[in-house]
Length: 177
Image 1 (cartoon, one colour):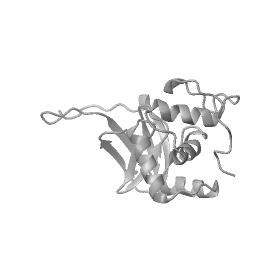
Image 2 (cartoon, one colour):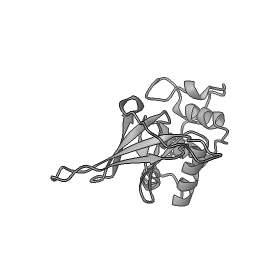
Image 3 (cartoon, one colour):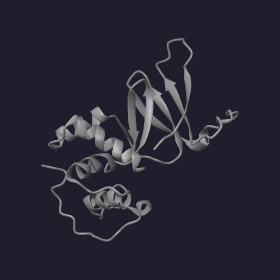
Image 4 (cartoon, helix red, strand yellow):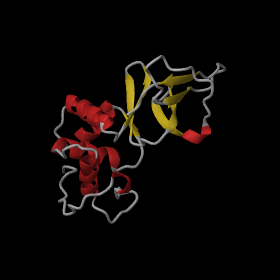
């Protein structure tokens, strides 16, 4: 059965900060919450966006790759292409609904938690977990080039199984959605 099989009966506008996601308010209609979140972000709630929004946001804060979300959509019997998943994740990121976390070359995760925070990246199992923003202090940033401002600083702490070698720490400076 499709994740969109439920009917949407709630048409009241809802602020993005006060959307009743299922994990926070079990009595709310999750499909209405996804639709309200999309509309608040300026996105039209198409069938594909609704399906992917439900898969992304109904499980709480999490980190997914496009391939992981595509596999979830297949398991949920949502007829979507991988290209649609990539396009939708890009649109959600540009609208501020997701935050992109680039961990290794082209490997990118999409984070449903858009608050300021940092990440652990486990190289062994390729998982990403949150580090609260207050746990890391970044000092000594260089001045931005003329005409530019630093929009954000993201710290990714790379982990691997202890095998006697030093664990690498990587600091990524750049824009996030």
